[in-house]
Length: 181
View 1 (cartoon, rainbow, N blue to C red):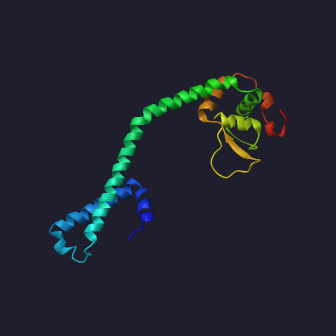
View 2: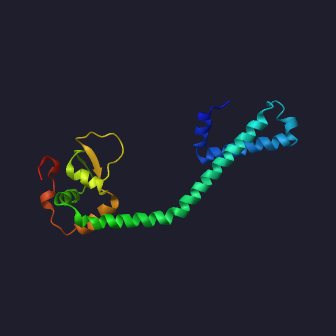
């Protein structure tokens, strides 16, 4: 008999597993109720029909939830995209409010053509930009002295346009995090 944990793991499985459960259980139930039973299902235990019914119930409910989730995600997609575009627009508008060290860091990254750079985790400028959503820390294990920071693509594209004509030669090749600024 499966445990509750086994049933919960089954409920979290993907829709192809649910489809297999539904089709296999339905085939067994149809075979059990038709004349096929006399020829092929004679050797099966008596509880097979009950187990098949449970499999059909679980498979059907899992597919229903997956379909409902898909429909909700599909229907809410335009609203999420609009909200995301507004958030990005607000983020780009907030660039004028950055402190001088924060602007220098973004200009330095652009001048060195690097969207991803390593910096101390507790550096005040990287912490501030991360808190504002202008820097991201990629997933994984990192050392606090050399934490990778990533500039989001929408911000990088904006920096390409905004800083294209600026003279940023003073930032090229320097290690910004070994200096006081």
